Length: 140
Length: 255
Image 1 (cartoon, each protein chain N blue to C red):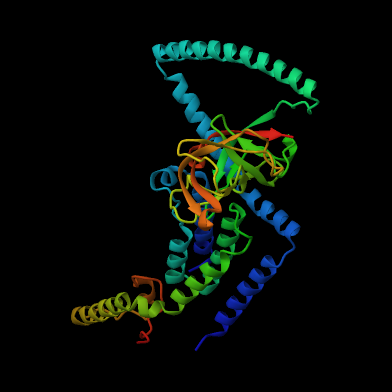
Image 2 (cartoon, rainbow over the protein chains, first blue to last red):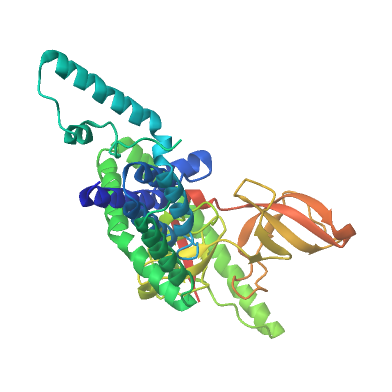
């Protein structure tokens, strides 16, 4: 994930915190506000690097606390711990998608061989992968 | 085995969290207001957009509806004028009686209208954000109320925004957030002396003894009463008069 995507994730977090404070529809309907930051940190930890997860937890937590009566910085650590654990185990969580991607790669190679086409380089797997994770064997 | 990047990221995040959590309270408050200030343009844009939509809605409102609204408002205005005349008479009489008894004269409330621009995104707290601040002479612990009753007090003040919080209201007992109910409109009235004649439906008002709220502001209504500490104390559940989730305009009492 490049810096543009990191910036996009942070921008969405900023808008999510603002909407949680500004929009009262859900609060009136359910009597409680839905927190969007945990969902965003799960997404970031599954699809981005740990630096993005850390940055999102840090800035998202500080933004959230600045609009809340929470002590400043109290939300950062829980968000980071969740993101860190999911990021550490993401190859295990995404093993089915990884296996499907590898299966698709093998089938593609067989078809290319049958048709007499040139074999695709290793780089092609990265660009054609379902999820932007490295195609390594899962730790089971 | 953890990689080096993991250690560096964890260390940096932990360091920043520890530094921020250990900031002195005034510095942390200023830091919080500064970070919250990043959202001010968004609140401004959202408020302007809402005004625009309301304005557009007003232009397409049918003439008959507007005429009916004018008629209703004229009636209400007439009734309020009558009530004001009676209140002024009572006020004069009250002042004379206070003078005769040698009591201190009551100072009329000075109220500043404010628009609610946001609410606490966390579900633990009941704070709202209003669009007045230091430049409007708003200070910490000022009372916030509506025509229905008490909203709370100002907990944090920025240059052009403030955060009222509704808790720790002093009445004949002490009001605190209810620990047993999920209904955010219910609070507990505790430490009411045993033998007090509390009944469901009675109004709960501020006593003025706490030093923050003036006397006689409506807090809510008693829902039910139970005995505590072998009859030494009474506890009551009180339904707040003001629903903070539906607030749009409030008044800040300038002291």
